[in-house]
Image (tube, rainbow, N blue to C red; front, side, top):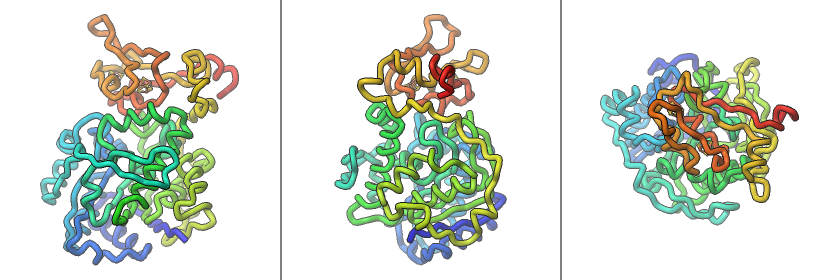
Amino acid sequence: MPEVSLVQCSNYQLDHLKDKIYTSFSNIGFDVKRFNRARVVVKPNLLMPAKNEKAIITHSEFFRAVVQIVKENNGTPVLVESPAIHSLERVIKKTAYAYVVDSEAVEVANPAITRALAYDGARKFKYIDISQAYFDADIILNLPKFKTHGITYITGAVKMLFGVIPGIEKSKMHLRAPAHDDFAEFLLDLYGAMTYGMTPEIPIIHIMDAICAQEGEGPGPSGKPKWLNAVLTGENGIAVDYVAAMIAGLDISKALTVVNGFQRNYGVSSSDEIRVIGDSIKALRVNDFEPATGSSIFSNMLRWPFNTPTFKNLFLDRPVPKEEKCTLCYQCQKICASGAISKSAGKNDIPEYDYKTCIRCYCCLEICPEAAIEKEKGMFQWMLGG
Ligand code: SF4
Ligand code: SF4
């Protein structure tokens, strides 16, 4: 029976955090002595350069607390993560992680060196290139930030493993799995490969920063911070995500990586099997958590023969840059794997979108630092309320 530790934690004060994280390890029966002489890969969410207060990245003090626990138990923490478009070095430099990495003397691995991870149990993606650093680990600590997401509804322990794939290669995966269900299936293939496909198997513990989470149009600058006051820990990422969604009071049927994950039976096939240790879901549940704007009910039809420009324009939200907010940084163009964004002919004009080519992955919306890209409904969506 998968166990999830749920611990109330209402601030990022270092000693308080360490106390809560030690309690979390104890709750799930993880002996911190296992860190002794171990190479412990610590993977926070470093999507992009962002202030801790925006709740886009795992809080740097949360990361520091975990690093100190590893060191106190004679382990060697190694930071690995692959941001969306910037280098890991740049994101560290532009965030509060710079000070933590420096003061704690944390080794930073290069996420760009990759190796193929093969997993026979995968449904579609049997080989996925991931950063070599994960193969070199004795233990992996995944530190997801709990946020909303336009495609998968929530982003937590399962979705956060997307960051094991280097840089822009991540957005290319949307080209291979454009329908939202397909994308969730890809994430579950990756989760299965990381959990069961490493030889020898490498233990992964998910320690979720849901203290200040993100609601609304997450997981980037368009989302809003929302305090959930919780640290969730477990070896089963699907179970951890389920409990997080329950605290947020979200509609679990829309959380694709949880619902489809239950069907895979990766150590858990229903919510009845999950044992929560520590505080109760009921005690921490909030009633006013704002989900991301729902995906169009037609998003799962983004496959041949429906993925035509006409279908997309009629039935799916399209990303639209807003002139009043756009600073012409063109990061949206860098992340667009389908080449749908180009520079306007005019010198000071906002990016031009080719909606025939756009696959509606919303990566541009996710990383726009100015939250300048908004979703606009297709013509029939207005009529059908889709
Ligand atoms: S829409 Fe956003 S990402 Fe694109 S150029 Fe404007 S500010 Fe930059
Ligand atoms: S324009 Fe935006 S939503 Fe469309 S394919 Fe490119 S990154 Fe994805």
